Length: 252
Length: 289
Image (cartoon, rainbow over the protein chains, first blue to last red):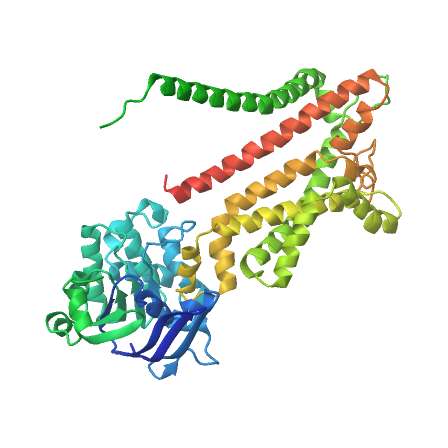
């Protein structure tokens, strides 16, 4: 039941500063879309606009439109909390809740939302930990604190935690930038698996990663969407000169 | 070419280093000596007066000897307990409001009032409680003492709660928001638990502070020679007892004042240690040991 995301003239300002300007993008369901571009190009800002995370930033102003399926998520009657239940997010640094156990991290939001109770919760914990390829490593230590896990395991726990809310879309903001190559590899495999069920948008500063995991790639530069197309085509035969300059390493 | 460090400069630097270290050690001594002196004096002069009778019996008239402060120990427990019961929820609640939702003018005003309140002399808290409780009830009471001390608890707990919540990193909140959890439940289930250790420290500081407060109790809780008879009656407290026994002309009462001071100090220290030990076990869980 994954649905496409469509942005129309999506613009984000922080006070006077224009961070993302007029982005039109159609993200098809059950695909991985990578967003690449040099630091400060607005890729993370764009990503966070997709699930209304800018609502908490003083001075941030979002205009234009983001639709999930046919629903406008910036519509006047839309509850941003409901939007975030359907569009989950994984952050740059693993951020499990330190006061909760591994199990507690996963069950926290489903309990709040009334999605599962009692034995269903145990089944849910196992299901999402298996989806996140973490079950075998933690099944005997679900009551331990997440701080006992490695960085890569913590990040997979965060992915499992996001999946437990049963979102349609998973946004990932440089999910492997704090991880070593082996942990990075495991997360990339996981992303590849997850796209069967979820629409995934991943911001990455690593072009090899974009090439490995994504179906389509968007190149952002100075707050604008320069080029958006199939990953293979964009990397082998970019149609914009700035895209080519960036992916061949001439700037950024 | 590197110019060699001359002997004179090296000597000068070493000297300056020694002088600075010497000054900091001297400053440390200035801070520690009075503290050790007070602690030592309270222990040396107070410990000999301790006895089973002192801990379990009611006071006796002066010069007859014997008797104890059992009613005052119980009384301090009751008054401090009342103050925490009234003051901690208000302080923690206001701290949460100011830290999480208080960016508007009401939040700024609340913070300003708390800072002013934290700085007022404690006797003023007693005057306020006298005005709003004692004059209305027509008598001194444990409740009035509890209210007076609660007025002192609120700003301390509120300010430490606010600071504790502000120390919780933003990404913890965002993690919860991104799961579709609203702001209020995020505060309650994610931010407050992460800050609980520092909030507890604030409550301990407030407890230690009010356990020894005398001035606000003089004309609220007053004092009593009997067992506590209810929150609407005057009640004996250790701090007021220390004061009234110490200014009395009777040598045996002076000894009891010293013993009471020793016990008050020991109880505050012990309470702190126990609370911290309990907390350390939770902190260990979070650190994964």
